[in-house]
Amino acid sequence: MYSARFGISAFLICCATPALAQQVQESPKDVIAAHLRLQGYACETPKSARRDVKASRPDEAVWLITCENARYRVRLVPNMADVVEAF
Image 1 (cartoon, rainbow, N blue to C red):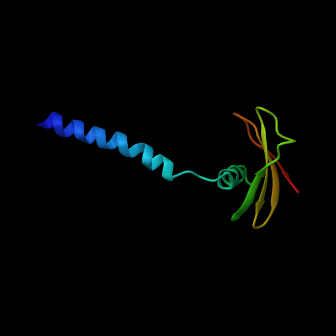
Image 2 (cartoon, rainbow, N blue to C red; image 1 turned 135 degrees about the vertical axis):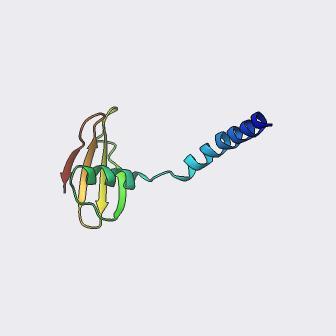
Image 3 (cartoon, helix red, strand yellow; image 1 turned 180 degrees about the vertical axis):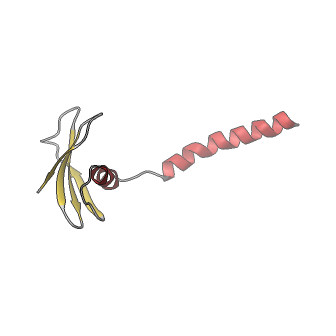
């Protein structure tokens, strides 16, 4: 009896986890704004973010983000601090 309840519980948890993960997808503007804030830059209410394809490299994406109070060019560098330029 106990093993049957445990099996059903485990099954329900495994089935529910992917559904929850899909609901919590953040937009690029929110993720990049969080990166900026972690590095001490002010980014209140991110409005938009678009990828700068020409400035990007295969291992370093460049994004142009517009916040309510500023605009930034952000180079996302893996395992290092992001390179941020205000413009």
